[in-house]
Structures are given as structure tokens and as C-alpha cells.
Length: 378
Length: 172
Image (cartoon, rainbow over all chains, first blue to last red):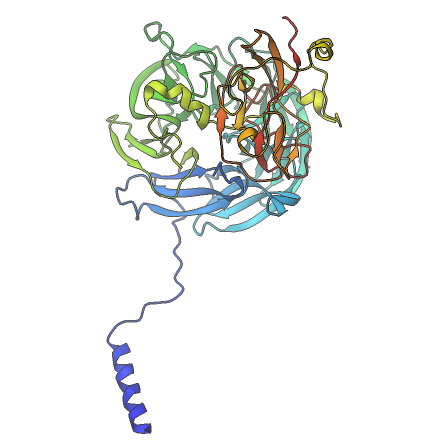
């Protein structure tokens, strides 16, 4: 009997030896610097908001499996920002201690870009705004040392976080104003309900230093400024409901309001900007705006059917890209051979070559549900 | 989840109602903040309420084109176990809301509508409806339907939205 067992064991061992055993426990990582055509899809999972995702996708790939690179979780329509100077991603999110109930905790979570796992977190006042995402709920200033989180309770304020020290520094009230637009140095600006802009210098302790409020410069009733701006070389470009754009120079100590100009030529008539994430920029500093025809009162969130590209220096359109499918959100990759990516009305991602204007592919079926915003990888 | 399937450019406007989402409101933000009972001072003709407590209405209150929903953004509570003016079981109604001014086709009058959210359970998921009439960016929160108004509640988790008539709008 013992001989038989030894014989069977020997046979078994020889069978194992015929193949190279695979290594257990391998977990992939991503490069610290993502290739330029990778994008981050912000899926707010509108039908179960506490389980949001930020999904990394290779927009160059036609291989539906290989282009999915990984994702991170983010709770309750979280806000997001990418660092440019270090391999970190930031998410402002909210948890309740018992899922949908219990004690509320808001945190700024710092994710490692390679592992897509949290490498740190800072508990902040449980006041952060929740709602449809924009780029200006969460921003970085002071050479990416300070994170700013917009709060709405509905009293409005800004939480100041020292990212490197992993420390909440303070809260700056901004009554009558909203959102955070990064300014040069240790400062931010906010849009105000009377059509003005507030700017705040942050002191060494994270509190309010000096502040300044511009004269009202837009009419919030007749032609409201859209908050969904794009910042190019320190200048924020804010479209209006009726198709004008205000340049606001945020590179100085106070916002410098430029003269507005029209995105729409006389021949285009009633085309207007619209969508959820309707502006973007490319490496050459050109402004992209999602546009739709036959605008009307209330069409400012309608899907766009074209993306218009503007030279902001010359204040004129230099290209228009007709979309294969109407879209609600757009973004542009960071390289010279840029891709325009768009969340279309089927909630899939369309990819276009900016150079040719050609529709290259549609990316769907990657587990996305409500991919409200897109981000070209920094 | 393909609720936008089949939509084309020609119907893009209708689509927008369901793509941009959540709005809650605000103009009353400053007025409401701290108002415990949540009944704000609004430009409404309350005198009419006593003599004619409820407006005549027509249409389907669980349809997005129902007159009360002119500035709503969310899941209609009537499809979620509640009604146009009540929350589903086990949720909590937000005392802080955004408002709309909607014209009632049954009598031609404009009414102030309070879009109180129901909170504490996850997204209802039924009857998603967004209409952007007079919607404004969130620097005017009282008129912005992009905000979650589950504020002043035990949980900020959003479930659905009501549309409660709180008075007739005064003539401008």
C-alpha cells in the first residue's frame, strides 16, 4: 500500500512539473504618468450615488477588454481633481456610518495614481456641496499644496486643506458666492449671485486673508454666466447662456474681467452653448465649446451636436467638429495629437481625432452607468 | 441603463431633461438657512389659499410634463411610494428647498412650487425628470436644479423630489 501511494505521488509530482506554475497574488499597477490618450471617466452612478466610480480608460484602444485600466471608488457624487505635479488623484466624498444613514463624514481622499488606492485622507467639515459635478467644486492652489472644497449647507464656504500635512486648516465663508476657481499663489475666486466675482487670499493658517469683490459684470437674469468654465493660461473662459464668453484673468491678485465676445457668428443665429461639461482646452490653449442649434430659454443643459474650437487670442472660431451622436460632456487630451472625447446621449464615450475631426470609435460596455464627466489624463 | 437610447438629435431637448440631473434649488437658500420649520417668506398670495385651498389641476402627476414640474430635477416621488406632495415611507423630507414658478394650465395662474426632496434612502430610480425652465447656475442656488437639497436632514442621501404648491405667484 505504501508503495502504491509513493507511486501515485510520484506521478502527481511529475504532472505538476510539466507546466510552469503561475504566480499567485499578482495585482497590476498603472504608470505614475498616464499615457496622453488615457482618460478618466467620472461615473456618478446616479441611480446609486454612494457607489461612484472613476474609471481609467485607454481611449486609443479598440480592444474593449484591454482599454479598461482600472477604477477607484468614490462615495456620493464625489468631486474630483488630478494633480499635475505628483502622481495623485483627489476625491472629496461623503460617507454615512450605516450606508445611507448614520453619522455623516466628509473626507478628502488622496489616491495613488499607480495603485488606485487611498494613500491618505483628511476629514473635513461635513458640508461639501453635493450635486451635479463640475470642475470647480474641488480645486488645488499654492503649487498643489492646498486643496479647496466648496461647501453648501446652504450657507456657502470653502474648506482649506493642506494636502502635504494631511490637515484641515480652516473654513472661509463666501456668503452670496459659490464655487472655487483657482488663482495664482494661495488664493481663489468665486462667482456671486449679483453678477460679481469674489477673490480671497488665504492666510498662513488657512483662514481668510484679504478679499476683494469686483463690480457686477454680468447679468444673472438676462444672460447668465455659466459656471462651467475652462481655464487657459490663468484666464477663465466663462460662456453665457446666449453664447457670449467672458475672459476673466485669474493670474493676478484680483480677477481682471475682460471684454466679452461672441462665440456665435451672425450666420449661425440661434446656436448656443449647452451641456453638463461643455467646455475644454487643448495643448495649444484653444477653447472647446459644446454647441446646439435652436437654443431657447432652458436649453443651456441640452446635448450638443457640434464642438466648436476657438482661438481665444483672435476671438474667433478655428474649427468645428460635427458629433456622430449628440453629447452632454466633452474633454480633450493633453497632447498635440489630441483626442476629443464626449459622453454621448446613450451614455457611451465617443472618441474623435481633433486633427481630422473624424469619429474614431465609441467606447461602451465598460460597466459605466452615468458617466457625467470626462477628464483627459494629466 | 439605457434610458437615453433611441434619442436622436431632433429630440435632444427632451433628452437633456434626463441627462444633466439633479437640481435642487435654491433661491431661498439664504432665507431658509436656519428656518427651523422651513416655511420661508415667499412672494406668494397666501390670502387666496384659505378661500381656494387647492388649485384645479389637470394632467398626470406622475408624468414629467405635469405642470408642477416646470423646474424639477430628480425622481418623481409619485412613482416612488409617495406623491407629488408627500414622501415615500421611511424617508425624511428636506426642510430646505428650491422653488419654481409654474403656470397651471387648468386656471392659467402661476403658482410657487416648493421642490422638497425626500432623503435618507438611495435614488428611487423611477420617473427621472428634469426641466430647466428658468434654471440658473448654482451661484443663484434658489433657482439652481443642479444641487442636492437633502440638507438639514439626518442623511444627505437623495431619494426623490416632491412638488408642493405653496401659493400663487404675485404678479410681477
